[in-house]
Image (cartoon, rainbow, N blue to C red):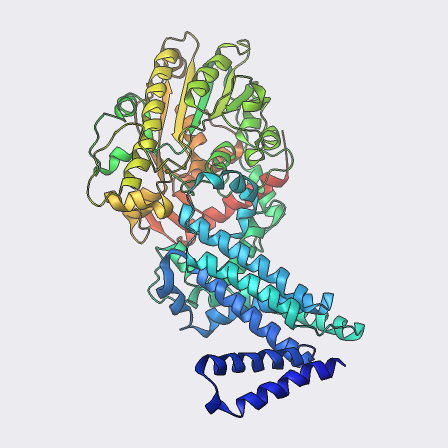
Length: 634
């Protein structure tokens, strides 16, 4: 009966098409469409047709992923992919293999298409938006911040352009097509088992021998204009799915408990034993207050903005009277925990902290310090409550702990001072505080107050974003100066370290930077430093200067966040634990370790390729770092 239903209309359409001279153009088009539709209806239970259509649909998903993967580089980058068969194939194969794996597992064509396509397009869209907001691509290790990103994404203005609409519409159409037009169900278990095993085996072999091949990765690119100085563009020039999968090995290397091939635990243990912990002399124990400021940067250093008020006057006055310098961070506009946790541990790479972990906080506790801190945000953000406990804090406070809590500096600075004054004065005190004020995004529709004069090609939106950012920074900078004035009269010795975590987000794809002429193009050394650098100052009151015998003035230099606690300890004439001593020795040769670009600064020169001696020194330190991560001592 079903065959009769299929073939009767087919004959009718053939009869009409046999007399084309009697048909209008719309009738001819309708007839052709009807015939194609009826052929599909006839073939939808044909196994070969189902296999072919699933393959074509998955190719379409792969191409859509490439379109999204091109992000802000647009159609020129998308077209460049097709100049390289390898780029296209390695981006299309994963969704195709996933579709067929699910087809053999479930036996249902619509399931096989829908779920792999949804996952592929969703992560491609996240990549698209991440580049739009932060300027860097989605990588595997972003899983550590995915929930936090979801909590703040609504603060940003996402550009829902035609690529997003096209991908969404295509997914919906593909899903409807797979439900209505693909009806061949795989019922034979032997076929499904053999097919599943075969696809899984091919996938494993491809990953092991192709997707992890570093030589292939380095020489594969759609855009032939990429250069070593542009890591983000190098990533994007390979599509999205391919570089994303290639990064899994790096992600595994960053995960706690995973050891790279060159790691030798016995050698790491011997190297660690060479460096002995040193105690802090009792007569040199001073109170320490550390403040990391959200998105705090000195935009006056670029010399391109005309200010209506001296926004950074208090900072510059403090820099002249303290030890000051520059941090070269790994992050831009977000992912605060990278700077934060590298500072607290001395690690060269961010990792996870799911159990008690060796850190400078634990070391200070072992020296008799009470350790605490305050973050003007929620405890769940970046999972700080348990992580800070694992890092050694006796007590850490969040907004949840105060009825009058606020994310503004009007709450943050007084509360820090209150915690310091209410401390147990019979033991030395260490506090690490983190602000929230100045966190992006910044309002683009109106301006609180004009701190800069509009210039050049600055749009109204960029003018508003910049002034609203500077409004918060102006308030923060004045509060820093007032805090230092208060501590200066404290009879107890206290050293204060203040630094920024990353440069601020200033519009999608950092439009403000471009419009005012701040170079953040990492194809140049200047752009690299502009993109990643934030200020730090280290202040000691008179009581601390007397105890430590140091005037705490001068140029502290620039280096990566992992070296900052060591700089503080050196100014206090403390040697620190064994790991800090080893890190300080490495710093004499290599003082910048930038993980996203894989750039180092060795003997003052930025490079991707360390000298043999530099590579050996860095590898020894990394072995100690991994051993320290997995062998808790305190």
